[in-house]
Length: 310
Image 1 (tube, rainbow, N blue to C red):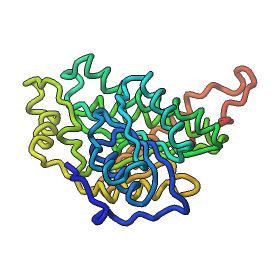
Image 2: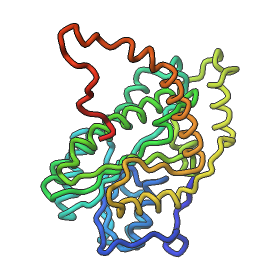
Image 3: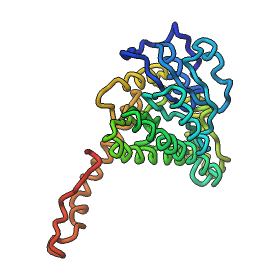
């Protein structure tokens, strides 16, 4: 698990021209904690949400009025609206909203319960969507801002035993693909952060285990479970360096649509997308053969009016 850093051992992060205001969810540990530490160390102001209000007492003691801690469970839609409204009222303006709160559900699709599925999606998908929706009116009113959503390399590929976690990440990727196009006219820009594996505590406190079925023990599901339990899952990423890269991306114009972090993320996502594109190209003739004939009603069928590439 990532250990708290002191200002003296934080990686260097470029300082913007003037201090910025940030709202970050899920700051008790992991990326949320690392981001909060670095931003405070460089002089920015942060509204940090936690589920246990005393989780950041050490940072509050050091940074005082520049850190505002608010209690929030992102499965509570009404609470999200209250906290976002209070955050903007407190700071007057928020430059960057980072949706970081989330966790992983470990288990085969057959093993997880309906209640666990609902909680996974309510936290990682609906919680993230609600946060963005609550922030948008404020960002429009102030003339723009950034929305940064923590996704994962698991938003492009999938490992066995994490089907519901991957469901949540693929879902939020689709949401932001569309949202980015909707809000760009208001000078609101979005970034999907896609980290690989790092020592953030995800493999311990960040995972909820479903009840295991013996039938899956000798399958890839069992292999994944044993690797995570033994701490043998490769974790090449440095959480501090990743947090610094996220902060630096807020200074980039235009905002990066995606921010892939970690050598494993680059390697695995590149391979997954390459394989997927090759499979699509092999099906080109079949795809085109299923278009309606142009002379059925005299309508041209090949002019696509928009695409996600815009």
